[in-house]
Image (cartoon, rainbow, N blue to C red; front, side):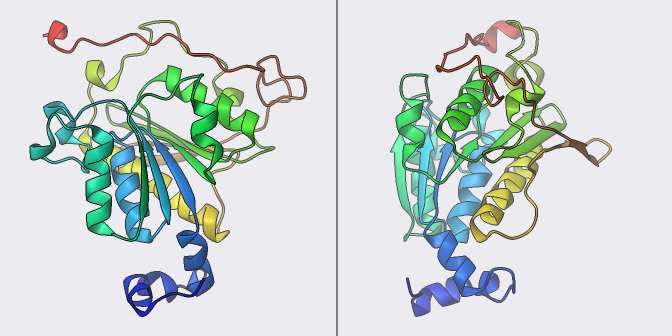
Length: 269
């Protein structure tokens, strides 16, 4: 593809980077990314990928915008309360960059539909807020040979890793979902709003690096940070040959919907 004058101007700060250039920007424009979750993580990820020119962005979320979302889900505004998150997100993406193709899926990812959801995309992003979804995304992507970015936040902490085929996956580190109610959700324990932006922008950067093929992805590494003391550390990972999904003899060969405890915030008061 050849860039128009308008595109050359819009993406000029990318193009002047020697590791991006016109060729790298064209790769970004041809990229197809699926963001599962249009909440705290999905919001900044979608904004930055749209601004960067990722040509096709899919957004999966079955929820409506709630007033409690506005503290961290920066793609949604006060007038959006009650609106489907995927529609609210699409509107902002198109305002940032009208050339982006946005596919919306107003339902939750499940074992029944996730394989079809990820099929047409080059890179998958986990922007969900529960373990059931994270294990489902991991398993589906590993089985389909799809690269993806995992992200998780709670209180003042964040963690992320990038998986590409043949390398450590989420299950190599966390074997199975924790017992019901063993780990609180953001609704139960709280989260500093800016943490979502910190981690979401890291995931967006990983996505762009994947497309331009430059730098080192967070492959076989778990990046963990704490914003209270502003410390970051890398934990070196190794693919587990006995991993139940990506190992040499996988025991998980079919997708499963794990139980996820619902949180009644009003009941916590």
